[in-house]
Length: 428
Image 1 (tube, rainbow, N blue to C red):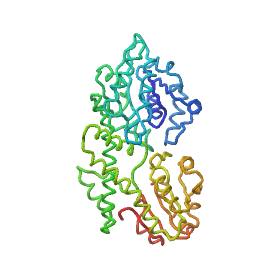
Image 2 (image 1 turned 180 degrees about the vertical axis):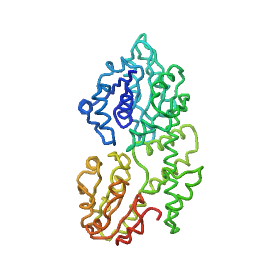
Image 3 (image 1 turned 135 degrees about the vertical axis):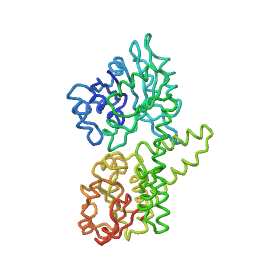
Image 4 (image 1 turned 120 degrees about the vertical axis):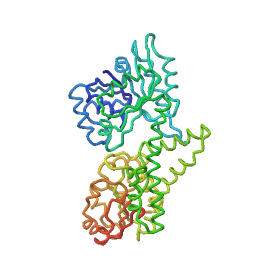
């Protein structure tokens, strides 16, 4: 099957490589000539485990092509996916301008005959109907199309595996012909197909991300109770998670969620609800707890540090990615800089991106031990495996002080204290 994907970010590029690996002829449209040239040479632009190898493989097989030209790609495709960004506006609503701009460009370049135009971008309910209206106005004579929604559920750090082996494939459309083509495309994927109307498919992605955010905020709320009560939040949540109706997965206390999806999707769902006259106080609380957890770790640093020299280990919003969008680390660093702290930092992948945001206001190091040299406090903000396996005795020798703030609860409390470090986790 011939398909086009507009956008080569986490969703677009990973999806393109997986469908190309299945044997489809895949075109990827971008808008930056430099990035397109890098992609043609096998450089995925961002860090994602297994992606570079997969991109190299499908390039070698000639199954994936990168272009700036809509005509040469859309004009030969059976299915066109949009996978462009929908960043939050200041109001919290998703900015759909790129989705609508791309829709017009797709519409003008449709081939004669039938094409499915399917949205993978996270969009508000009703967006795809507006996309259909835009395309209808500009499509060439003889072109037929139907719109669909196929939301993605990949998680950064495991995006390739998530796309090959998803929990479900959601296909939403009011056209049976579009549904059948999309089911055919997804046949190699061994996962249940959930076929819905357009509105349900659009709402599913927001609902899923809001549920994940809720589990994190719930765990963090219990962590705050645990700190005040002298309880161990990990034991509390282990016991709660044994209830099969609840489960333990994704119920991890820490410094809050970040990234390109959960923060913006919770904000967008709040705005969607308000526009519909729905009471959004539940999701307001989910967002508020997330912000509280960032402040919670700042308060610990300020209270516990005997001087203002600290090391932060982990800058990306989660491990196995270089993404710092809505990363708690950036918020925490900016706040601490305003309070006069001197900050050493290390992350396996995300330091260059933090430099673009913070610049040289903090000190960057090539390993965690150099970052810890001479500091009073070490703060872990991302649960990279590299940090789980740190030689904590060596770390302590490099430090001037002895405070370890574990923002992800990755260390055994008693082991750390036996080494001679004063340990402070989240809810422990």
